Length: 286
Image 1: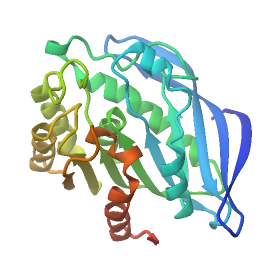
Image 2 (image 1 turned 90 degrees about the horizontal axis):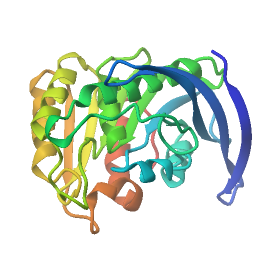
Image 3 (image 1 turned 90 degrees about the vertical axis):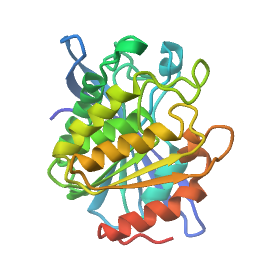
Image 4 (image 1 turned 180 degrees about the horizontal axis):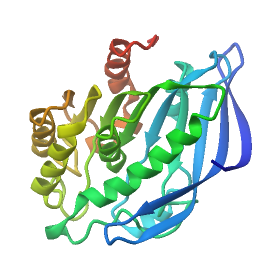
């Protein structure tokens, strides 16, 4: 699979001068949107790893969220999550972050559009995002410094739902999935805590649960202004009752919007994620 390398940078970290290395690449992908249109273009991929950790490294595929408006999606720039990426890289992972079609430096059409609020069709948007993840996983397998049999999926917000969609396909080499505040159809400005068509999304999660067999951790907060406190519990229950293994954690309120727990309160989720990863066989230090 051809890709174009753009640049590499090193960020100094720690007294021993271990370096968080950052690389960028352009990766060709092809997806289908909710209206049956096929699109092919390059996406921007960012990679982080710590040069003090031994190769080959397990992969952490980290998917970003979705702004409610086109201006916000264009303003993403490039998905990086530097603080979280550093934390995982220091624990031995190569962190891979796709900036998906329709966002920031990747640009392109909105292939994740799911229709009007009352008639949301969530599945195709998640499928388009998940397909880009599958393409990235296949590309990463070509790297000699990657352990393609020890991959973890992680995503925040729409990226969390994308992670669930991707986990439902049980990709070879993927051993676990972590969903942070996953969902879609929320807008904290116009309808705080009340996402569009939550029962439709519940049915989508149930469909994923019928095939997903990867251990998963779902992390939410009670004051999530996109999805509220109740709906995530319903979604996790539907996923579990369909047959998928899931651990559901809902933290009490954090900040003015708990939806942002992943970026604003790492000290809260890191012990929970570290414990989950240890139970999947990873040697994770506190």
